Length: 571
Image (cartoon, rainbow, N blue to C red):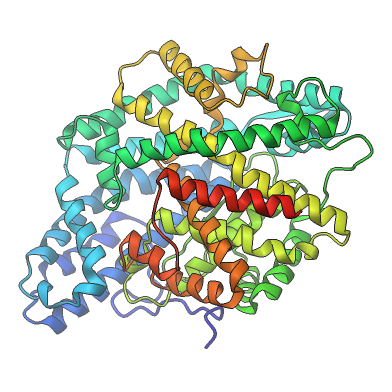
């Protein structure tokens, strides 16, 4: 059976038609697991399989509630269904999850499990036991609901251009317009629209920071950053490694970004480069228009993936058949894009806001890489084995952006356009690093200083931005907008501390691409083999399986940046 003909995990513990409707219907299964005697290794393994099945069913139900809500933020019933799960079901599961974790760790047969296969899982279970505090359950429920408010606030944002209403995602395509004055008007309209909600978003963020800090204190940590590092399972690197990464970006990436901006300024024939110029092309050159509809974007991505490796295309075809895609931007849809793994179905769901831009192609192949990861890890025995660290998850997606470039003629039939698309992609690979470092450094400060004022927050944000500035981009007169620039990063609201993973993984992806340039088939085999391990190995081991080094230091960063710079020169 091809991995793309994915089968829903069969149920042996829950009834086949069981759905999560209330805690009363769910509780007996948790009680069964808790009360069941485990007197042999076989009984323990059967218990683990049943626990995994229950976990998968609950997880998939929660995912569908979130997917439906983000696809239509204006539908109150969908928002209520999600909130019901988060407030009424999730908090009741947590005490059972903790007791089940303890039951596993304390069982005499646990040490007889295959220690290689179970090592990372058991390490994670022990971490959950260490962090569990009953008083954090209501706080965590509140935090889940509060974080979703970001999507609700952002989903309502739109601007009017030439008498027509656009979401901010749709409007951003005008930043590629050849008319500079039009670009500026659109840029300022987008900034002004965000600015209108700055106080609402500031209040929301302040509330999140305070609640998160309390969660950390309850669990015995000095601050939320230290708590979150443990909660996220960052066993293989430290905050000091993050600081080293920030410095490496300043040293080896910012000068490259400055070169890219200087070249852009010359190309456009400008005296000063402004933020509304960075996506533009010289007069007479039309913006890249790789597709018109979500359907066309999908078809072209499938044909691109087929040339790379047919299995990758099959994954997207399966998702299409199952209706697991929502690709086009529209009013009332939450911002952003994601691939949501579905623990029982196996085939994940891709959500994005395509508006016909080059950026959407990158998002689609990126989320497609995540989807392939979901497919490859699905055959693993336990749900927990499929929970892989973000630092490898993003290697899956970012490597796909780079691998697929060789087949982008699926989107562009003119050689000149293809060259521009590749150049755009490589510029993006480099220019994203300072933003990642800024967002990460900002988060460290926010949670080390949880009592900060809104004014202090804005000042610190501006100061950190300055540290990573190239000096080429003229930002004068935009200070008031810039103070709140962090508010457009949904991760700060919804998934705190999840951002440096993109930087770590981008380094990994460039390493994968170096390998791909030397030996395509070997690189794709390594890629697939590493992803098929799910979360059953440590991060350094997963990177090793992919044939790359897990290293955030300045020397490694320099090697990789030199490679990308050399590839850009070839274009």
